[in-house]
Length: 415
Ligand SMILES: Cc1cc2nc3c(=O)[nH]c(=O)nc-3n(C[C@H](O)[C@H](O)[C@H](O)COP(=O)(O)OP(=O)(O)OC[C@H]3O[C@@H](n4cnc5c(N)ncnc54)[C@H](O)[C@@H]3O)c2cc1C
Image (cartoon, rainbow, N blue to C red; front, side, top):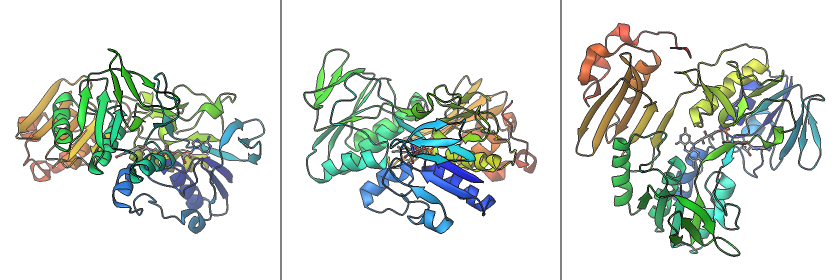
């Protein structure tokens, strides 16, 4: 089959490699907006800190050549014509396809006045991160304002602070990574950020990026104006779907997909940050913008495009803060638990969220021992009530669990 893959991020390059593997005689054309080989965004901070690019180019810079993928860089898709089965590029050229994988990921989402001012920077892609870090390397930046207290904002703030830039994070909510961390776990991260020299202004609403002709700072809702050499938007991400506006491919916030990751149009599948995939716990469809989901979805979407008919078990929520100094891992959800088990001592917080005697989420800070075990028990929907509060204690491990509890139980998207 002749397949076009839109995107060479973790989802796109995984889909392309899977297609080559399952259909060696087919052809794969993979398109990206950027001038770089396929890269891994989670490795951006480490790349700029150390100069190493092995983890960044996680598939190798020669992946396309090695696998026989026709990889085209700076090839921006502007539309998809599903009647003629063609992808339309910004230069009006057309690429015919028999099958289409949409893995166009996400872009910065900054719903603030002045977000389009020249000089507003972001750390969402290698292209924008290179521009930002270029200013640091040239010695043009001594102070930075990072608007947004999510994972990307925190990773960037740590990087800048390590490089000697006096950095402030501005966050609307009163704790960090509000969608992933609970306030107790956040407190551990906050203490470490402050110890690393980052200034936190949480519970503060940024109203606008300001400056003429280019950005110089941020105006807060109370009228306060903060200025800095670098002004960075880390306010969230939005799936790249604009090029589908005139197509019949169904979209909402992201692309609508079924439990096979097929879109509303036959012969078109979607995976990664652009797809509204089912949640493994609730079955609810929304974008789960993390690397492991992008890779897993791409493998299934590519196989299904070739006729495999494989169901996707559902996306997980998982996060880790890699550069904090204190390990922090979050798994699953903290939504509507019936019970919270918590163990807390001197900078270590271990919390488990339970519903119907089963783990629905884990938050570990300072001591992440057992994270894999908790995830395993969660995915297997094992009844853990018998273990009581021992379950969350630092020493609890696989030796405390019966074999029956760990035996495979089908993972499905319904409870
Ligand atoms: C700084 C940073 C740190 C992160 N850290 C973590 C982490 O620690 N753990 C974790 O799990 N996740 C992390 N993430 C999130 C993770 O990187 C994403 O979930 C993952 O990259 C999604 O992969 P994707 O292929 O769906 O999309 P993307 O990586 O966004 O790739 C999208 C691809 O589509 C291409 N594209 C877009 N529009 C078009 C178009 N119109 N025409 C042609 N090509 C197009 C782009 O050029 C790109 O190649 C991090 C992200 C960032 C930015």
